[in-house]
Length: 544
Image 1 (cartoon, rainbow, N blue to C red):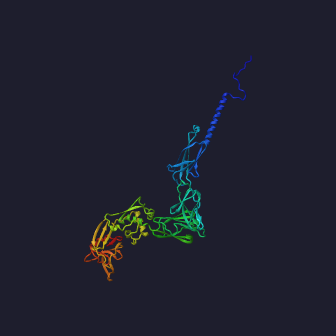
Image 2 (spheres, rainbow, N blue to C red):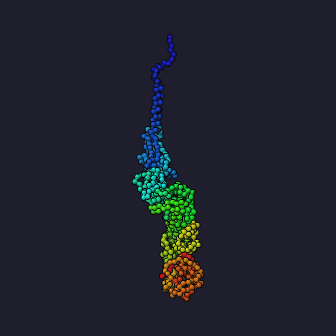
Image 3 (cartoon, rainbow, N blue to C red):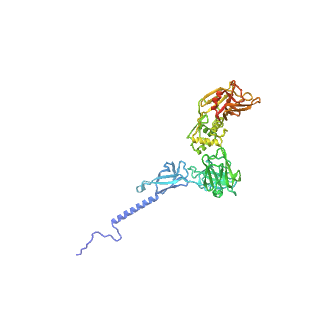
């Protein structure tokens, strides 16, 4: 008997697989398909966020990315920036500064069939800068009568130009890389600020200078030659050639000498910035160059080695504020905001641009005659008298004019917080018989005394005058209405206020009616009492 050992199961035909093999093959195929779909989902569901041509950011989404559900933006300080999102573009709802750092986060909800494999949402976050457009040429050559063109390295949507920080807007029909500023003088310098996008603020101004063709190096100055310059203001010099070519290592010389520093702004421009109190107010300054330069004068170029400017006086309003602060006016001044910083630069700035505030009378019962003399921001006799008193106290020439020396002394005192401790005094004289003299000081009447004014032909002039000479005893000379010349020695308690007219003692049998040659005569005791209250600068009003 033949016995065959082996399995009793049927054997597979060649090329065929068992059911188990077919199962694993199908499973592997399914897994491969799922993996392929996942990879395809990853590839086709991506998003990217980048700077846009017009918008702050452009969102690019693949076909299977899903739906944008949230867009946020914030600045470098972490403050939220309101934005609008439309047509895949993100635009700020507030003005941004050119170059401002902004972080953008975009959240996207994936399609449901991908969510189980890739998650329900994805987030893309980028940090970018708002665009900046730069001036490409800071020095340009412009033919006489031609327009000045400013070129940028990118199109700009808005520009403004001017000088001294005062820029005016220039309307553009469409974004452009070249902007015409129109025709100007033969030479000049302008500050130009630009915004690359409509949703940006104007950026920091750049300086652009233009020159006509010339053999000599051409100079443009800011401020312009012959114009006003502020005491602490910088003076900019821009040359058609490089500073190194024109000046080498030398620098122009200022007259009078002014403490300050030179700095190189760029290869064509240098600037001088005064230190301390800078150039004296109400003065002329000149700048001498080591070599000849061509300077624009009207439509012509003038070859010279010198350029001049004028430093104007400070404002009358600020002068009054400083005099009040220093105790030389019958008024106090109160700043509306923060007080002016006690630094030379801040005080100089306030001198030309006075801060807001209010004046109030220092004392009760101020005579109406004195109040009527005051006018805020305008020259008046009260201010003149205060200047004279300040000049006398500070050993300055007492002319009642606020020249450079007065301004500098006032500014120094303001920085030091110095204030006069003397009361404010005022004298008024009645020419109506019986004639009297009244002294008012620090809110009260000190004395009213009979007095004598000038006889017919030598009447004491009506008006208000400031005492300009103050002596305890002196000699008086003159000519009376009859033509007789006189010399009187030992006249006591003299305060001259109008030419040869003075308050003083003179012995008479009686007082109260015209007897003098124009002076205001008083009894000895009254004159002695009034004299200490009438230093230089004290106002004397003579009224009918």
